[in-house]
Length: 106
Image 1 (cartoon, rainbow, N blue to C red):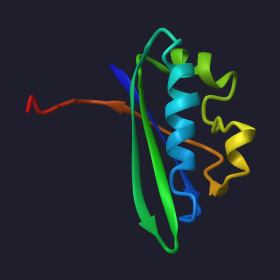
Image 2: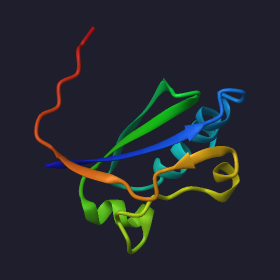
Image 3: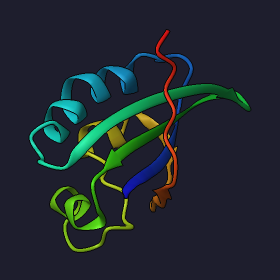
Image 4: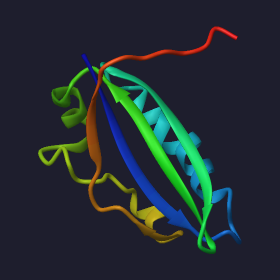
């Protein structure tokens, strides 16, 4: 069994690269140091004059996620340096058990 952790934030379209740059340069290197982290995806969509980014990370278990989050596994982890660059962000995350995973080999 693996766990998907899902979180979203909204950014100003005037600086559309700020969050993806932070994700690539700060978040992913930190996550890669945690045994049991299985991967991540960053998704983007235009939403009511903002850009919404959704992050989906995959983990071995909730116990492994706690190595990243600390005690409250449902709290969002948002670095202060990027929080000021966002319009707003979800304070909590969603966790779901991954029942099946299919990736195209193409």
